[in-house]
View 1 (cartoon, rainbow, N blue to C red):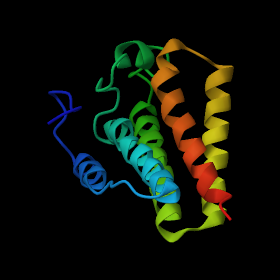
View 2: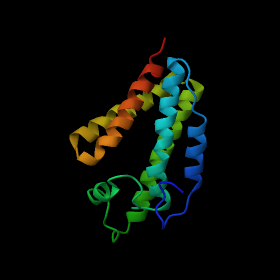
View 3: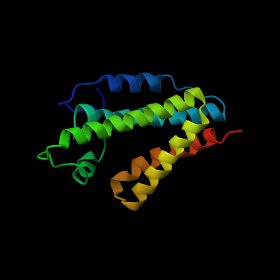
Length: 152
């Protein structure tokens, strides 16, 4: 199964992400923005799902470099909890953004935009080259969610 290291079996998270990606279709600007937000949010199920079911597993390009710069001390008592909670938080944020798009909730779209802007700011502050794909991901999502949040 793609993006799944050999020691971690495919999960429901992978299935949900794939099902969501298959539903993406192209339409008007607001629909395209909604699909971008849902697509980028669904994509986050990959690294977030890994964090829940296979803490520290390398599934994305440059994970070998990125993970080593972040969370690698498996001897710490809270290591597994930290990874699991980190992944669960990203999953919940992604679901919140998908729900905001599907319900048209301007308040939650603005909250999602605030999250993307804060994430981009934190990446800029602690920049490492391995953040490049996430900068593209959150930048694209911020543009799309901003369009939806402030649509007239």
